[in-house]
Length: 510
Image (cartoon, rainbow, N blue to C red):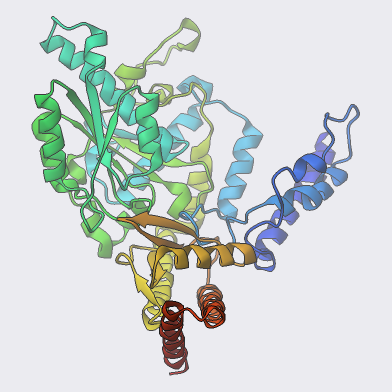
């Protein structure tokens, strides 16, 4: 492919992407394929001769698009948003075109220095403590990781190495293997699975401590676990707290956790992968309480900042602790400007050696949308979630499981877990909207999250109509089964369901 063909192919691809995103509501959010569908459509070996790009682009529609779950669809309400925007897509293309691998300053000075700039921009935008900025006098700063999973793993590994070095210094009678065998870490039982996985990869057990009835982990629970472990001869290393848990977007009590971590010299990392975007809003300023006392935190720009995956911001109060833990230098990695300025070599702040030019898409997105545009985007998600919350509250057949948090509503149809399971299965079979369920204290519930590239109020109404109509149909089927069976208990249940349906219909008409 020469430059002429590249221009043609590239322009056609841009048109394809724009058409796809503009018309994304026309497609069911979930694909209608079975496992292995693609294996039957493609040859078992790569082509010997080059194929025309028009044929390749045609096959995107023929074999790839039918197998996509449409994450940018306004009918996507599962997990958390994985956002994108036209400026970010352009930034991704430019970064791919430059093709730089920025593991050191000399490998592309713009790659490193632009990251320093945008991470300080973002720290100020989110109103983070000044010591997390590269421009501060201290050793802190920010770095772009690929995902929250990577950021958490970096924190866990760095904390582990710092703890081993410190404990061996104060207990020289113990071997390194003896020290490592006693390490232990902590998090909430509501935390993301990546935290537990980080413990596996770090060969260090992570105790998942029970959150309260409000899904929040507090300092007294952590204190009890640490005191128990210290008494048993174990060595507490790190606590990974969460602002915006996966299940219910609950916020751990950072202030009480930080007090305990400071007392026992335990690293405190905050996973704010989703909720971190709300730091920018003054009406959500309570979320920032205690962040001045944490050692590190992460926030996914690909959730709220309209930057496409992968792009996770991580800040360190003392970056030297990570650099000291990860630093492996070879002669081919050195350059004459090394160590001569405040500009970091970010390869020491991460797991891999190579680095993508992610800062470029961040910079382009921030400049074309502006701070107010980003704040408005977060507020829009919150307002749409409030709209859905009101729809739930007006239907007596449903109940909220947790308070609405940013763009997430946790709710369920009243009754046993089987009703929730059957309702979700019906919705999944129809493929019009996509949600997932979660569970706490034996109760299963549905998570409705505002996602999509450009979700509107009408999309929220569409989703609710789909949900409530499917519950109505489900209840009607259950009533029919109860009448046919003649079972007294089933008949009683039928009357209760029938009355609930009538009430819901009456309230809707009102």
